[in-house]
Image 1 (cartoon, helix red, strand yellow):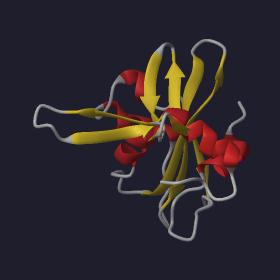
Image 2 (cartoon, one colour):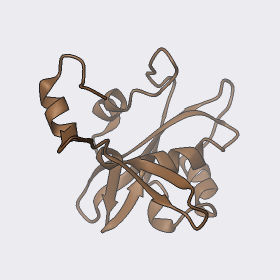
Image 3 (cartoon, rainbow, N blue to C red):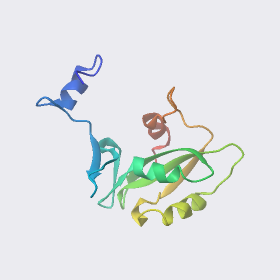
Length: 143
């Protein structure tokens, strides 16, 4: 990568010492496979535990009633940040907050289970179908 298009500040932040710093987090397993778990900017710190939004979204994508989901942290007096899932259900489906939380409980650590679930008709997406996280967080990020 040479630079961010017309964004010298972002280029300077990402390019340091000739290396591109993407902000992605990951790990290498025992087979030397690389697993990306999320971006630093999307890491939720809840009670000192780290929750990666992408990891939780992949789990929630497995729910048969969920069309799209966006996960992020919201301010919380007790935990610093609390996990929130904004969910768009598939057409004709209905679900409750408790149903979504129950689905999560057997598939992830307890601190990762969303503290709140917000149901919406539509989530804003890009032309290729990627959820516009910033817009969702701006609209549904308050307490």
